[in-house]
Image 1 (cartoon, one colour):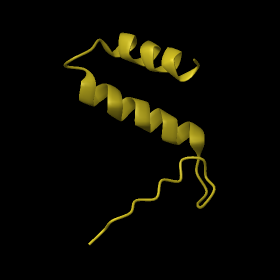
Image 2 (image 1 turned 90 degrees about the horizontal axis):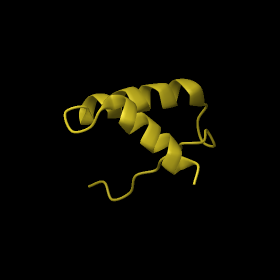
Image 3 (image 1 turned 120 degrees about the vertical axis):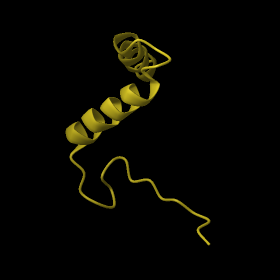
Length: 52
């Protein structure tokens, strides 16, 4: 039984190409949510919220 998930989003535990990871993350997120939101609106909203 798995009771813990470790997320290494900053490359502390394993090497991560952050630019590639973010590109793929936003592409996947946009595809999943595109039936609910305009992709350009979604991307701009996420970026704006991330910098608050």
